[in-house]
Image (cartoon, rainbow, N blue to C red; front, side, top):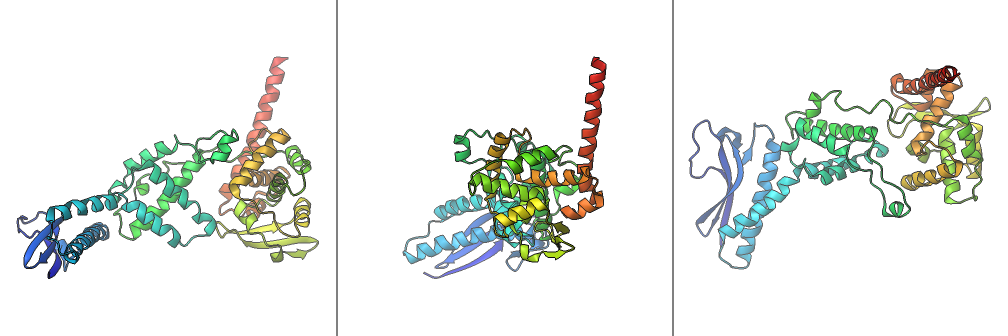
Length: 399
């Protein structure tokens, strides 16, 4: 059997001037013509040399046409190879099963392909995969047509009602799942906004809905602002644990973070060889892993104790295991504030500010892009002062 194939515009020529017509796959087998509709309609001027051009979302439409065309070819070639008559209705049914399935996931497929290609730090890239998983779970933003402000609002509402992922082991251990925090929801929006900005540049969408939602989704004023007091910091340092145990290693990593202000990813990448001893202090100036912003680091005595214990290296612990062990350390010390890896960074910042270290210097120690971020810790300390005034005022009124 001989065959020829092509993409054609409305082979019956029924499309009126100024109206859209359907793109079809034409297959000629032994001089008999078969036509398979793609379901995609464009103006006649937008279909040139077998491709859709000069219209919004042309790349996306061509992708779907290609999916349908390839499936038609697969089924026709199978029919020819097995010397069976071509069943056009069977081909149409199978083609649409595949086309609809592919079309329903085109956005998620694109996101999955793009994440490894993003020009970002690996520490930042890992935050994109949870977004992909959440979008799959939600299941209501699957195509480019779904990328609207209305869907963004719906996604936000859904995120505020779901729980953080938790392992079966943690559940069996009695750990209760927690709702995603405002900061967590904000980060999902931040990540999705970045991907949609990329999609806009690549012509996948005509506009980014987040451009119309400036200021709508906020991190939250009270998110990530808890910290430990100096007494609580000492409790953690002095906690008696079996040397080399998982709890001991996790405590030491937390102490390292607590007295360097380093994030988990920066602590993980710590290299003592980069430090130089100047005026009796080990010093280093370099970029943060996540943001690339320069920060200034000096190793204080509690940090040097940890490094000595681990022969100049920082103890390595899987992040999820680390946070789980910190909860056990919290229970053992009787500290009320929930311990987690990022709390160490908050504690370092507030500890420095409460000991009269200048705000601008703390900014450099933490590697913040903007002083506004550092000011958040100063606000927390100010709030503590106001709370103490209020407490003392209540005492006086009770007398």
